[in-house]
Length: 180
Image (cartoon, rainbow, N blue to C red; front, side, top):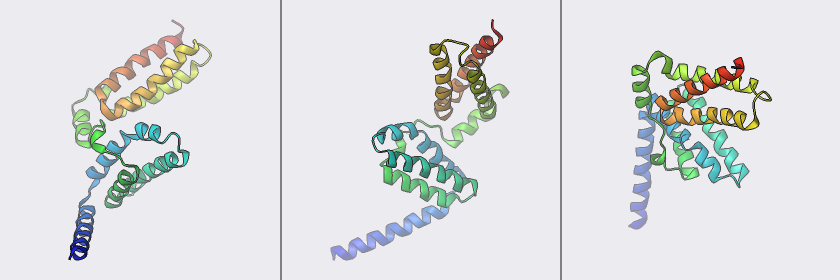
């Protein structure tokens, strides 16, 4: 009797998972991407002593983005669920913004603070900072370089702060490049 119940349980859960996969849409796949992405650094640090496991996580995470790009949302969700299980992730611990929150921010943002403008400014800042290598102290260069990493993290969790920080370091880099 216990074996029959176990088989029924396994079969019924398989059908539930398959049904959930069919219902997975772009928003759900992107939410998985952002939530797991929000745990990326934490997961990499968790497996810092196991290079193979760490690299496997990074490679597999990018595979989900490829599936989203191909509009294979059900496959992407299944891919991310496997990553969550294989790496023991708790996405409820991720501080990453949901797609809905990102869209709401973007819809109400000043044009200079949309996601696109933050990314363009941040990329531009990276180029400016690279030009400052050897022209400013190593400590200043490291501070500026670290700011690009912080902006990258904030873009997952707090776009308003990411925008503020990008503008702040853009002014600093421009001032240093102009020599004033």
